[in-house]
Amino acid sequence: MSSTNRTPHVPPRWFVVGAWRVHRAIHRVTGGRKGLWAPRPGHWGALRLTTTGRRTGQPRSVILGYIEDGHDLVALAMNGWGAAEPAWWLNLEAEPEAVVELRGGERRPVRGRAAVGEERVYLWQQFRTIDDKLDGYAARRPRETAVVVLEAAAG
Image (tube, rainbow, N blue to C red; front, side):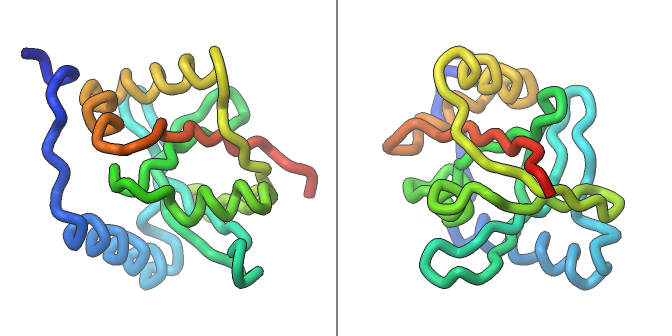
């Protein structure tokens, strides 16, 4: 059986959450010098996304894996392959305007939206070229994983 047909192992939730906290701490403690990187062939990058909290109206930041599609940045709303939708995606659905920070401190205003139809299929395939277990991970979730396009916004 190929690796794409099996449901791959995912670490326990406490480990995933702990890893996220450590990653954010590294970014914070180094003043942003570490923790973000650009994608390269066969590998995703890491960016910092700041959304507006849908309940609080306060800025909320998270570090996400991403790929580039032309000028757009693309992430998966996967929440560590847990069942719940990630808060950052729910925040973007409520208020699509956000800011990303890229390696080197570059900041850009973006507008988030879900890819649909052929665009979603194409972008999902781009992520599959990086991780052939992607479909197996996605099968762990009770709903389709949103492919989120972060388009350049005015500002």
